[in-house]
Amino acid sequence: MMKPAPVYQTYAAVAPEPAGFARLIDKTGELQRGAYDWSDEVSKLSMPVLLVFADADSMSPAYIARFHGLLGGGQRDGGSTAADAPSRASPSSRAIRTTTCSSPRR
Image (cartoon, rainbow, N blue to C red):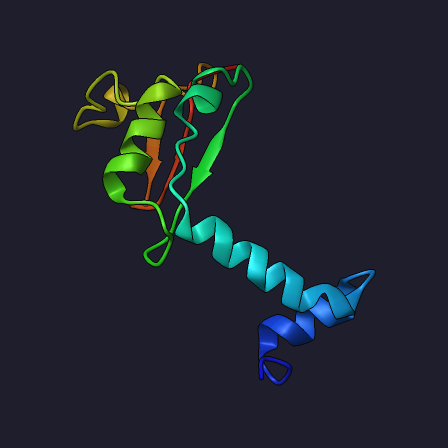
């Protein structure tokens, strides 16, 4: 039923085993139905992290904000002037539009 869909067409064009598409969809559905909490893993990341979320993602805005906090973000007000904004030389948490934020970790 999904073979005409762009998601299948793209998968079939690049997958080493296009016949595995149904299995991929089943496993994705299984993952989406289950509860998951990556807080422990996220808080242990030591490298810079770029969080990218969109309107139709399965994570709630509260969960996204929690991840941002676990990575050290949201610790100070960004201020209202350019002088108060985080500098590129010393990365800090900053929102880019409403759906993307980066961690202050190096």
